[in-house]
Image 1 (spheres, rainbow, N blue to C red):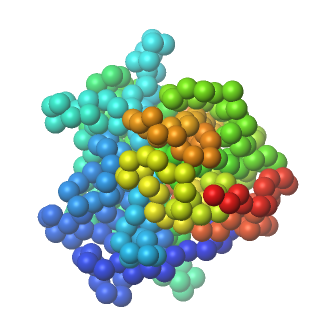
Image 2: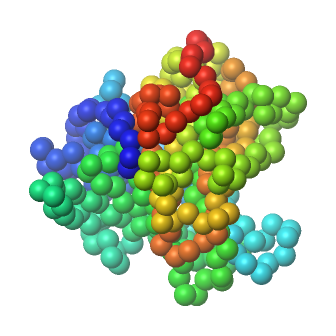
Length: 350
C-alpha cells in the first residue's frame, strides 16, 4: 500500500503461537478461531471463546493496549446478489439475518474453516523474499453455508501479510452449483459500535448527522451511495474510503445507556475499505446507512446518528479482493499519498 500508518505493538498472552512470532492463529482443536497479528488487526469466526457476536458474521478486532487481549472492532457480513431474480428482495441474501439450514433454528449462516487450499485449522502460512526482504502471508479459507433466499453458494479466502498487519484481504469466490453472482459484497455492519460519523471521500467528508438530519426512527436510515469518481485514490491507483468517529475518546462515551456488550473498549481508530487498481470495476461505489439507536434495542447512541453499514459494492469477478483495515493514524495525517482538500481538523470532545 502506498501510505504508512501507525500500528500497535501489544502482547497477546495465552494464545498458541511462537514466542517470537507476531502471528495469532489456532493450532489445535478447541483454540479460539482467531487469526491475525499482534501488531495489527485480527479476524475470527463464531466459536466458543472467540470474539463475541451473532452468527453469520466475521469478527474483526484489535489487541487491547489495556488488557493485552483481543477486543471487537467491527463485524463483516456476506451479502451475495444473484442475477435473474425478481425485484422483491430475493436477489440479495444476508449472512447474519438468514436462518441456518445446517443448524436448524439458529439465525445466521454457518461459517467455518475450509481445508482445501488453506491447510490446517491454523491456516496456511507462507514466506517470500523480494529484494532481500522477507514477507510472511497467512491465508484462511472461510466456507459459507449456502443461502436459501437466492441459492448463492460462495466462499472467501481471508489473508494477511506481515508488512501490512493493519489489513485483511478478502478474496471472494463462488461454487459451480451457485446461481450466477452479480455482486458479492462484504459489509462492515457495526459502525455504531465506534460511532462512525465521518465518511472520507474525495474533496468531501460526509457527516452522518447532516446526511440523516431529518431521520427520527429507530430502524435503518436510507442508504447513501457514492460512485467511484467520488472516492479517494491511493498512490498506487487503488480506491479507498475511510470512516471515523467524530469523538476524541469513543471508549469513554459518558452518555452510554445501552447494554454492556455495546460498550466500545478500544481507542479512536480509522476504519477503511480499499480496492486495488486491478480489482476496480467501473461501477465500484461506496454505500452507507445509519442508525441512531443500537441494534435490537431502543437505546440511543448518544451524540446522534452514526453510520451502521459501511461497504463498497461492484460487479462480481471471481477472486476479486476487498481489503478491510484499521489504523490509529488520523486521515489528515497520511498525506501525500492521499490528499484531503477539505474536512475536519478538530475532534469533538465527548
